[in-house]
Length: 229
Image 1 (tube, rainbow, N blue to C red):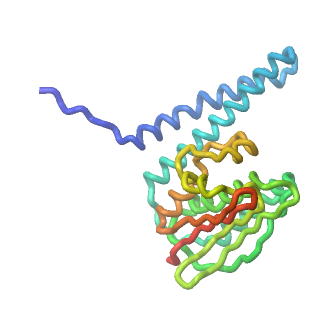
Image 2: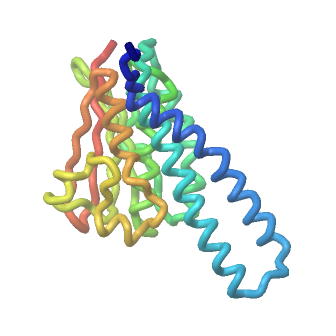
Image 3: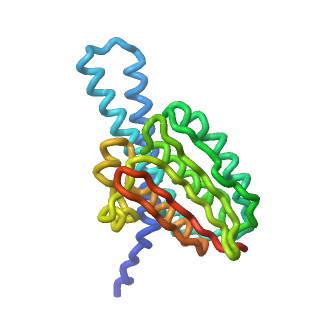
């Protein structure tokens, strides 16, 4: 009598598959870059390879986001995490990014807040993704504001931008895997449609919630709310 078929865990399978894809993509990127650096290719050939590099970069970002998604689903580390130092690291990291884009990155209200339960690495990823998006989808000359405050029973982290905004219809689909608004695709071609999904999963994994206030063409306010530990 044959043994029953073992059906592998879907998340574990896709996590392993995504991990296996990292190496060949990285090797292909390195090979093409090496050829391009020779600067001896005919212009048309170089153009084709440059397009290939763009697509490989997009695939590399997608693989990284997928791995983050699967790890968040599989892991649930609960320790006391201080958000203030994480936010300081993000502000230092993104100050030059904002400057290059011509966007003002400002602390509208930063309080010293109580600790929250979670994993420092994942929580930083959630905070960071919102800042990255806000800068990416904002025009030069606009402002991105960051707020971190202590409410009675929660810690609230908000990122406000004056960017492209999100319509009511698109807001209903915004946290769907691989969804990107038409306006977002016009502004940035390198998005994967997983960044905000990842934010939502991380925050909800640690008992928090995500809120959005936005209007097309008039910017957005993304707010993460965490229970005080």
